Amino acid sequence: MKQAPHLLRLLCLAAALLLLTGSLCEKKTPERAWERGAFKPMPENTQSYQLPAGISIVTMYGYDDYISKSDLPLFMTVRNSGSSDVQVTFPAGLVFAASDPDYQYMILLQDYTLTAAGGSDQDEILPTYCCNEDLDEPDDESFYSIPGREWDREIEELLDLVADKALAGDDAISTAQDALFEITDGEGLTDPTRTLLQNLP
Figure 1 (tube, rainbow, N blue to C red):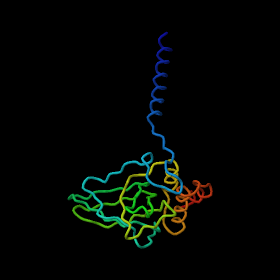
Figure 2 (figure 1 turned 180 degrees about the vertical axis):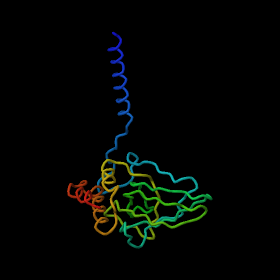
Figure 3 (figure 1 turned 90 degrees about the vertical axis):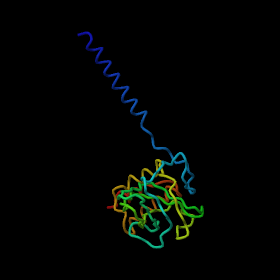
Figure 4 (figure 1 turned 135 degrees about the horizontal axis):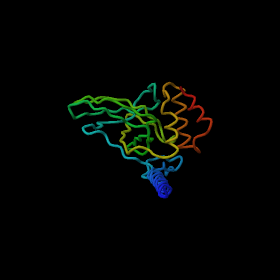
């Protein structure tokens, strides 16, 4: 009977160690490493992204028209060199960098998923948003690549706020873009903008 309290203490100690180990293993979302007004992918904030095997991007540049989910989308041609269809997801937070630094960095605020048909090229229009208010908007002479996914506390908050929202139509697009500019070019996301985002359908 005297062993029961000892055993209980050992079990409690093991449980405490397990909780401590779990909390130490969790990665905390980092603060932004880029300066406001000069957003760019930084090593501290960039998560790697790889396309599935057999999938490549032939070209990607600024699209010359508005779409229902973005004022400044990117046109992209995806190639599937394999024989089978492949589902490809471009995750929220994925950043697109122009080869010419005069053009804005672009970002996805929501996941974008497509099915790349086997053995073919297909065109897609990505509903991207601008990260640099003072740089040139993408056009058909701005060619883009993918440096990785942005991972910082402020962008993550924005992505969480719009994750389940219908970002379509002028009001929703404008609200989301204004929110992004508050983070990248302003002083940070404001409470009124948080409320507007939360009230989106």
